Image (cartoon, rainbow, N blue to C red; front, top):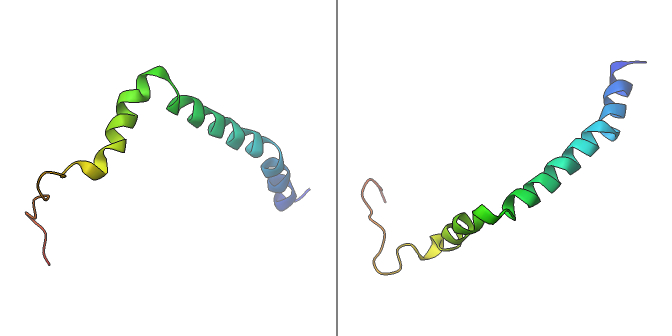
Length: 61
């Protein structure tokens, strides 16, 4: 058995299971009870400087 076949079999089985586990874990992590505050803060990022424009300090145009 050559290296390519070995890696191909690994990618078709265990790696696929691992990636699916990571996907499910990421979904469960975002739905945990403590993440509501972080999600709310991320949702309000576009409106952070709604009253006044952001500081242009350090920006060159």
